[in-house]
Length: 141
Ligand SMILES: [Zn+2]
Ligand SMILES: [Zn+2]
Image (cartoon, rainbow, N blue to C red; front, top):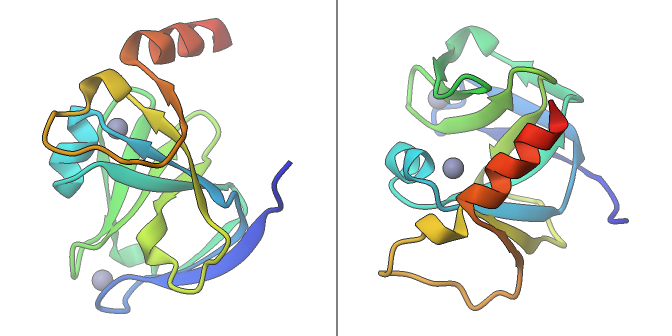
């Protein structure tokens, strides 16, 4: 069991400030097309749970990217702030937002079968394909 960490983050323009109190330092990477379209690259995300304080939330615009989650970004500067699951309200945030976060390790790669052939990581991680992810979600309902 890895220890949860607390860290603060801010968007580029400073309109939004975030304190995440329960960050799982084992982060994941998502190779799906939605994440790559959103950010121009795979999404490096840390699980932040629900214990998150947000200052300047009026500046956050949310986009419903699927039936189960939405993505938030700063409406002033465009910094991507989170992927949020509708059912639980839990946040996944870009790992790069947290400048002072230490002790991170890449633990999981989602949609590994959707990873394009122009990059690969040497990190040894768990992987899940689209079919495995769909089967997992189906078993949770
Ligand atoms: Zn901003
Ligand atoms: Zn994705």
